[in-house]
Image (cartoon, helix red, strand yellow):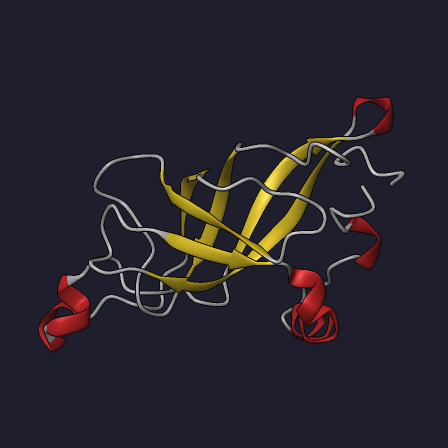
Length: 140
């Protein structure tokens, strides 16, 4: 209850998600169009409220013709939150669990990363970009 997110949560902001998945639906059905493996980022709009006690939330792409695709699951969605003293922190709010198809103009569901904290801390350290567990959005 000491969180600035309680009781109202974050509402329905625009966030940024990252992934290495297919760049378009064509790559999921035509091997000649395969395009996964390149990091991309897109802005997504939150369609269900982000609340400290909620397990996940739904998003859609901000820009028409974009979306997440096969291979993007496990990618993070980040919010820039202003902390004490005006400092802005990029906080991991969710990990993509699933997305609808086709890849363009689709919907994504992100789950609370705290459920996967041990895995995320180890993987981020192994990749050379360790996360700081103190930047949990629940405690921000």
